[in-house]
Structures are given as structure tokens and as C-alpha cells.
Length: 371
Image 1 (cartoon, one colour):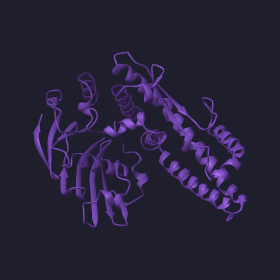
Image 2 (cartoon, rainbow, N blue to C red; image 1 turned 135 degrees about the horizontal axis):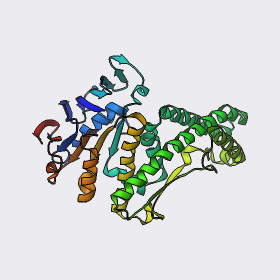
Image 3 (cartoon, rainbow, N blue to C red; image 1 turned 30 degrees about the vertical axis):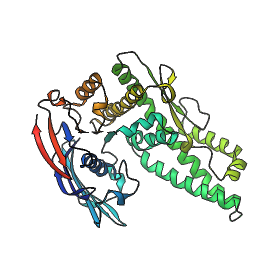
Image 4 (cartoon, rainbow, N blue to C red; image 1 turned 120 degrees about the horizontal axis):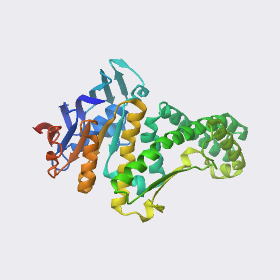
């Protein structure tokens, strides 16, 4: 899979930009606050329909403009696809090959993002790790995004109803309308998460072992709010969810919260049996994150027969030389990769003949050299 062309209009600090990237390595350099990360954000938004750093769509629009356009041409399995986003003050439309379509049409376009903020996957709250499961691991399971959105809507409605019941504005019997949907969608979310992790975790462990020269073993475990045994079917998870939730009904009514389900789950990440969040060094935490990101590349290839696009935002030179070389050699001429940095560090020699160096200045992009 390759980004053949990206066009931005009124996106962040870009008034107009056309980017025709190299099929292998693209190093995007320039001083701070010139638009390097914005360029990666444009690629990410084109393929995912959302930003990796802005909560609201209006935040990606150039100041005092009414419409933002993100237009891309993507090559995949010998075909060219045209993705066109039109984002207004209150509207957001996707045109896929010229036809207006829902965002789910993009589920088979893969992108893996690695930024300094990804350390919160290790250091942050359970919400950060659930975000990883839902927005990164989830894209490896066709249909996951849709079922997760359905679960989220039901969860919101159910929590609202719990408050109304507490305030005596609704009948407790109304919960039954939402309960079965909650258990069905929730069981599906958990089942799909576990199925993907079953494939992802061995890849991440293998990569981490290689990155650390065999000195460290990575352990990853799914922590469910339900009591689950390995290998359960979706139907069995549903039954456990249903029975466990009924036992907490009175407490949920008091707290006005749904206390069980995938929205309460977490991942445990350990190195040689020791919790990475509390006891891992920053270098170890970064290596765990890198292992999880690279395992997504491998699993995507195993599942779909092609690699996704890789975006590295100002992280490559936080890695030591060995990890830099391992990463570059793994992706070179296989994965189309976009690397932002203020300092190239002589990496041009490593990827000689397989990339382009780009210069960004004040929202203007130019090719500096091909190597």
C-alpha cells in the first residue's frame, strides 16, 4: 500500500500543498512549528477520517477559513483509489472514488502511527491502552470499528438512563431495552480484541526479544472487568457479561455507571515479569511501544497480504543506533514510511537509494534531495 499523492487545502498551516512522496522512505525535516507533524496528520486523517491529536475536526482547519480539503491517491493491490475529504464548519463528507460514502469504506486502508505521546501507552491510564485497542489494534479486525461504535452508543444511553432512574424520571424496567444490546455488543468487542491480541502478542514478543538482543522478554495480558478463561466463545462471554452485570445492578443504580464491560478493561505490559509502567526505564518503555507498533505492521501483512503506511513523528532519533538501524532495515523498500525530524543524524547514508529528504518551512514543502 502506498500514498501516491496528497493534496492539502486550508489544513493547519498549509494553505495549498501537493505532496508526491517516495514509495519507500520519506524524511521530513525543518525547524519546530513549521508543519512537519501537520503533514503526517494529513496522511493519517485521509486514511482514518480523524486526527491523531485533535479532538475536534474544526481544529485541523487553517485559521479563519471555512472549508478544509484533504485529497489523496492511494495505490493498493495494483489499483488506485481516490480519497477526498471535505470538512466545513458543521459538515464532514468523504468521497471515495468520487462517490459520497461512510467512513467505514476506509477500514481496509492501514496506517500505523508512532509518536512521543505513544509512551502514554505504557505510562498512562487504562484509557490510553483502551484507545490503543480500539483505534490501532481494532483496525486489524474487519468490522471492529463498527461494533465498537455501536457499543459506545449503547453504553452512553444506558448510563444516561441510570441517572434518570436515580432521579425517578424513568422506570427501572427500561434498562432491559439496553441491557441485551450492551451485553451482545460488549461480548463481541471483547471477543474481537482477544482474537487479534492472540496473533499480535507473539509477534510483539519476538520483536522485543530481538530489539533487546535477547536480554528482555515482553509479557502482554488482557485484563478484563469480567472473569474470563482463555479460549472462550463470543456466546460464552455474553453469558458471563449478562450474569455478572445483574449481580451489580443495585450498585450501578447508585453510582449511575455501567461497571462492567470492555470500556473498563486494560492491558498489562511487563518486562521479564516486572511491570513496565512502574519499574521500566524510559528506554525500556519506548522499546515496548516500538515492539507493539512493529508487530502491527507484521500482523497487517500476515492478515491482508500488504503492509500499511508507517508514520514516525519525531521518534526515530530518540532510539539508539542499533534500534534505529533495526527499524529502518525492517521497513526499507517494504513499508512506505514517513519520518519527521529536526535533525537527520546522517541517516541518509543508511537509506541511500531508497528515499527522499523533504524540507518544510512555514507550511511550504519542497524536495531537498533524493538519496
